[in-house]
Amino acid sequence: MARHASRGRRAHAPTSRARRIQRILQVVVSLGVVAAWWAFLAPTNIGGNTAYIMVEGRSMEPLLYGGDLAITREQAHYDLGDLVVVRVKIGGSTSQVIHRLRSGSEATGWKTQGDNNPKPDAWTVTNRQIVGKYWTGIPGFGHVLNWTLHNPILFAGLAALLALVPYLPRHRRRLTPALRAALDRSTRERRGQGHSGTEVAVLALTSCTAVICLGLAGLMGVGHRLASVSGIVVMVAFAWSVGLAVYFAYRVFDGRGAIEPARSTAALSGRLRLVDQMPAVHEVPTDVQSPVQLRTVAEKYRLPILHRIDPETDEHMFLVITAGRGIYRWRTSAPKPPQHSADPNLTLDPAMTTNSEGRPQHHLVEA
Image 1: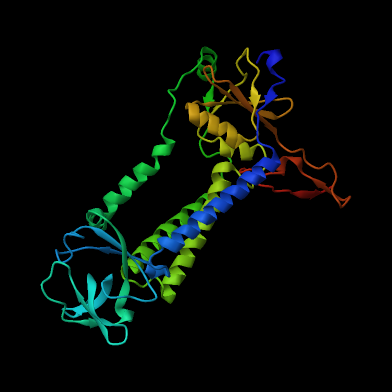
Image 2: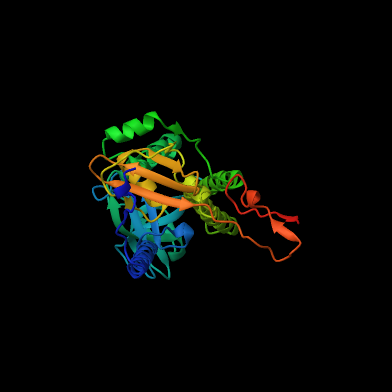
């Protein structure tokens, strides 16, 4: 690398106070969204006040048609003329029917009737059988829900594809001549360096557990058993497994918990190209704040990351060279081992300060 480019400059980053304010605002907004969802949209089978009913038949035309999604909300009191969803026995099984309260009262019971039906229904219902009062509806959305219930694998595949949309490349890959020359002399580094095999296994296990718990929660929700003891256990297990999966995902993919340089190689794994010398550039590189920030730049421009290890200082330099968008650099070094131990008869073996995964592993040997 050219001598005048060695000093570098720091990337502009928010101050710690600005970051703290930003995080507080993110937490407040997130809590507000969750509170609004719980107040207006949380379903009754998990303790909320909202029920979602797929309309079948023609009894409520022209207000509601078959395939519409009706959304109801639980009320403290109901009046004549209210459009409600009631639970009734039909053919030996319990069904949910959306009809209007035509006669009766809370004390004597209610008679219901569909707007498009000539006669009232045969049953009489109490307030305990009323799921909720009609709030709003989404025309035709019930057909979508019915399709997802009958095609869960296809729906999961489409959802996964949509989840990948934010990660699609937004920039065309462009390599500078200096980068091309460096890549021709480079060696691709093995993927997964710095990752702990145990943590990868735990991440896979917790992710599978979260998926299984989510499936069980869905089945219990359909059967209105999510508010039972077993449903609560499943939801707690789901939350716990998701939390562990997120924790170990950060450790595995961001190298958290490892010491340098294993932390950096873990965070940048998959894009590293080892070189003996960095290419000469005529632009002052921007020093980023972390290997994760450098990885973000490399992913944004779909570029490899050059990696050089200084044989004299053992400093690791990582470089991303873009075409006209700047040069970004991350530098780190392995921590120096302690020179003395507490026991004068014991010394630290400097060659064994870390294991192969970069985790601390100190060995003391007798002098």
